[in-house]
Length: 423
Image 1: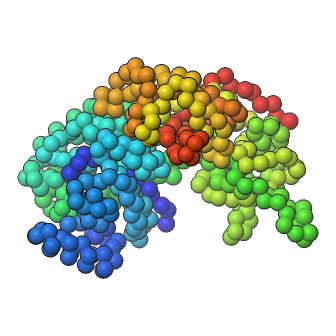
Image 2: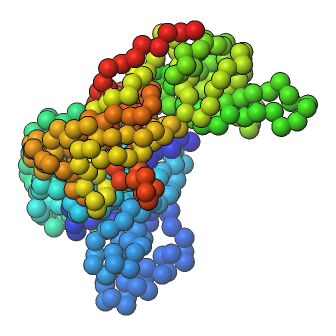
Image 3: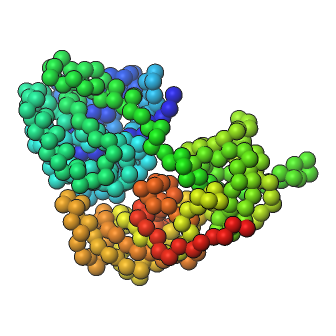
């Protein structure tokens, strides 16, 4: 079975936590003691039915306020696929939490309350999902039971959302009318909405095709660890461990080592389970080369005629996650794949209003703000644009003093590119 990572987003009280609870409950993805615990809590609060939102609202403040604050991860599986769910907060003050939870998602579910229609927060969530390069977005129009399962309400929301989404680079956008409270179109098709002829939400999650979402053209292998011989018996062994970030590597392929430009050939690809003929993302493997080359953590293997950008200047969209604002001249550590270098903010070009998508002049980026910045690094980085690779096109900024992650960046272009001659 393959694995699907998906996130949920929506305005406060749109029913994100209830939807996830319904998915877990109806797919038998919770234990009996978990169910008994939320049944007791629901009775104590005087509810007439089990409050499934309690399955994901783990913080006491979340349970007391009825909102999602932190990212909650849940795992479940069906006979067809395994799932990791990231229940992300919807309020604007927790934008950084949403970015964190959705950064690795293959699919995003944006909930819209059928009574309220498309709100500014709904647009903001779709914008952030598109910004993060999530290839599949499902708009779940929830609480259809509270509008009498009216088809006209659903069609109006679908039309309004679709018109606005044309401004965004969304590859796959779908709409499903649901009632998370009663289970309509969540796991099974609803008898209350015979006018809807599409799949249930779970069926859609089980069958969405994600194999083509990964970049299998641009071969990229950031070296995480150099494995050297530990005994006389294996004195000739030298392997390079890491996770394939893009493309397909095969035994016998010619590769170039960046940033040095030295060229070699793959002699062996292996894992703990044995030898492989080929490796593709997101596999973690050990690659051995025919030549003894100076390679260390932070080096990258690629094809000689398909190399990433090698540069010390880049432009990126940054989501700011720290209380202290980002300002031009700010100095940080920049972690890109397995390479960490010092970086300085050369320019804050503009901030982005995530509700209107307008660009606004700004002297700084405050907590949860998103903007376009230019950065200069102390050493060379091997980059791709984020639209081509979410792995080699993304990075994080780190406060040198506290080691806190203060920003998440998505590369849109690089500065002057240095051509690496293949040795």
